[in-house]
Length: 462
Ligand SMILES: Cc1ncc(COP(=O)(O)O)c(C=O)c1O
Image (cartoon, rainbow, N blue to C red):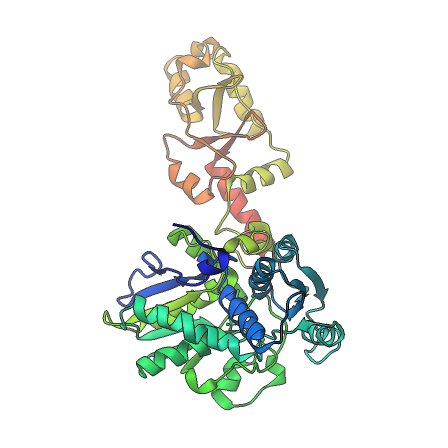
């Protein structure tokens, strides 16, 4: 069995139940995992539909050029369709897009023009204006214009909606989807409401975008439109695909909550998804909390996490944005960094060293335990309390080798081990763990080191 080309693999994505993040929720929450599309996003569906309709209407002919303003995923879908069908592609993308997304478009043979994010859509430099102008200037150009092209919405009416209906056997009660061009939410909602008018449709919007206000008041408030980070959802224009009558509620999500939820989906459900998927699931869980066991919530996860590796899946980037509590994801590396800054090196003794050498070292470094090491080999841990016992018993023991008095070897951890795991390992009997360094050699982490780090990180936060 084979496929004639990748286009035959677009759609028919799986619906997967969320199990861990839904603890305490009695409704069923099902994720439609759109990264199973060949371009790893939901936009493959509309790319194929818009191109095929343009071919049918004679707007796109052999040798033609596809020009689109895209936040990345539509470009990916169009580039894939164009590669298979033999069209040239030029995309304009806003400069807040991940570099990975832009590189991926170029890998598929597209030409990419990066435009400034912080200009209004009617500005001649905006990604929308640049795409429109190029489409007018280049002969044989087709401008799919996913915002206003109703084939976008139609693609979801014809595929996403029926798939969800069949996959839930009509049991769906709530549909949650991000709002960008609004093709996904409006096309799918139209199909679902035709089959079952009581299905509740909940749109996911970001702070800085116009949808929620527009839905609630019919107004656009320019003061509520400002730059934000989440990619793929939220708008500063009203897309032609929007039909507000299909949407029952719009809920906004912060960039931070969306990013943290995407990370949780990866870590706890194995769903390595993009930023807007985090936003959508954040909303789906808010909605599902109020529901009963009879309810079935379907939430769209639009794309894959690989395109966000340098952003939401990068701890340093997340901390720089203030999205990670400085302590919530501390690792042993953070402790070692703070120790290194203070010039604290590893003090250790060899098995044959006399007890008095160990006592000297403990006093000099003001520490209460010493690992007993010989090259790469870890023998055990020597504690201050054990030495007090030994010397009280027999003061002449100071000349005996430490190996006679050592306790069990300490647990060995890696620099990447989270601090909360290390802190659980530390007990009165085993007050330190050894860290096996990537570059070879050892370091030690004690309870005092953890306390120091927490205090230092706390002062960073202020
Ligand atoms: C990652 C991502 N999520 C969500 C959306 C929103 O989908 P729609 O444009 O159909 O409203 C998009 C649209 O570009 C997207 O790229």
